Image (cartoon, rainbow, N blue to C red):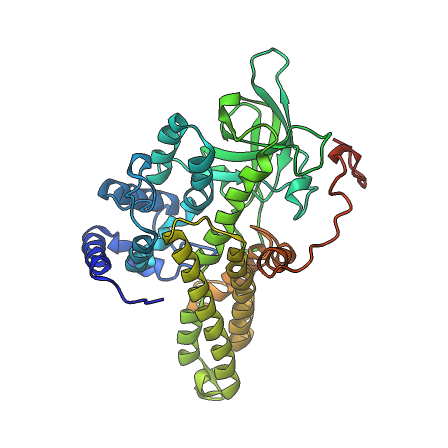
Amino acid sequence: MNFDDTPEEAAFRAEARRWIEANAPRHLEAELKRASFASSGIESEDPMAASKAWQKKKAEGGWACLHWPKEYGGRAATPIERVIFGQEEGVYGALSGPFIIGHGMCGPTVMTWASEDWKRKLLPPLASGEEIWCQLFSEPAGGSDLAGLRTKAEPAKDGSGDWIINGSKVWTSGAQHSQWGLLITRTDPNVPKHKGLTMFFLRMDSPGVEVRPIKQANGQSGFNEVFFNDVRIPDSQRLGAVGQGWEVSLTTLMNERLSIGSGMSNGFPELFRYCLEAEIDGKPAVDDSNVRSKLAQFAVRQSGLKYTGMRAITALSKGQTPGPENSIGKLVAGANMQDLSMFALDLQGQAGVAWDEDSPQNGRFQGMLMRSPATRIEGGSDEILRNIIGERVLGLPGDIRVDKDVAFKDIPTSGRTKA
């Protein structure tokens, strides 16, 4: 690939830079420089309000969801132009955190599977940040086996054609802030588990929906439990055919792994700066050969993630759908975040135990370490991703699945009620 801008791309970059310089919230720049994968870094005002204000301004200027069609709130830009804008947006891109799931996962799924009327109704307010979406997939008893979900969707008995939902989801990011959610359910327990699923979207303020935030180790509550008690959903809010939910979910999952892997803060620039500032035996840490060796390893990983991401961008620029190879970026990025933050805290010594405004790098690496275990689970655990890469990218033999042709209701359970 040639990474130099074409004349058209250079002109686009100049236009984006002028707009950002004229409109960016400069008063937040210092705080945003402290942003990490766990936090926007904003403390002087409501982070959600700041994020919505910046997203609204981008939408009004024609810079929101650049690659989406104009009628859905985008700009019909090329994938490369989207990357260029992200490069020019710089630290202000941290304000996009609340919209990553909606813009990167739910939006593409709605765009692929919803009716034209629903697309025109749902996508523009999603692009502008007016509405936030969440992804209602994982369940307490399912672990990493999404197809093992037990939330039921049954036809309403009043003949209305609506569906009645009962069950629960867990680890739902941003549910407490969301107006809409993508919901995958089981509609037929009499067929193998991957075939009896159906996807819906619903208002999160629907009667019978309860959201309970989960307190995390890093002090935040980004994840939630969500409970459904006789929630009614119109059939018009179904995505795909009845029983086609697994296929629909793959659209979401492929975009999810691309979004998580490409959007994850790797922390390497901050670690390098810290190694220039920190001392070992009275000398800069970077002078230590062991430190330089570790920095070299992290630099190689960062480079690999960058160019693997560029491969995905190239595929998108050719009109291709994100594929299983995007699991590579997510797998490496999650482990890299954990390894890098642990190394940084080792360099801090006893100071690494503290986590406050006086901590080195404002506690960035402490926050990364507390958040990093979740990155190795969400969007597919490390084990799931390795299977995907082995089977679908490298062509290795698949795992033995004894339940492949067994009806879901007949799959043995331990301490659980059958569907």
